[in-house]
Image (cartoon, rainbow, N blue to C red; front, side):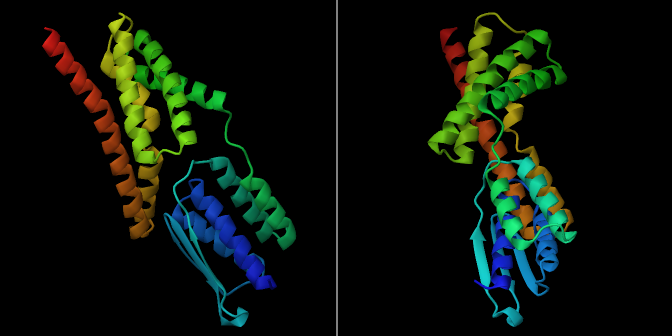
Length: 256
């Protein structure tokens, strides 16, 4: 593999790492172009979509090209920041090609937050949202318990390899069911506030934000894909929680 091909490989891997971990399309493409130019490949061409990357270099380098499929993955903004920092160092001439490969591999292996930290963050975040939306402290306690359980369910589904939409549907159903069961014991005041608070970790806020950003940057195809992803995720959350609530109302009506 000659030097331009190695640069193309490095830049494409960096772009894939950015896109897979939550970077917007425009940031990914700009970073790839900066890295390629800084490493001496001025005729680099890249086209980035929400779930794919197409890259090539010009006829001066025998026109090698690469195509990468980038499926949806867990967001890890620490990796995004690390790749951005690496691109800055490359642009400043502080990092050579071999060192950049080694650094990129280190970034790829950066671990996610520990499972315990994720569970605690989900629980306390749910409690805070429940209170923020008008609930009392008892509702926050219920949302805390439900949020802790929700993250355990999400981690289990992730290990099982469940799809994102299916995960959101089951997660929302779990939130509604677990909240109603806790409220049946007499704990809590406003079940709706506790349910809304515990559902917030499932809300596709990042996908919606990036979709709007892509549309503003005139990346219409990527923006529409992200917006559609956010819409479908929201629908699955609504269906999961709504079905459980409807079933609970039906059972309550029959009992009366």
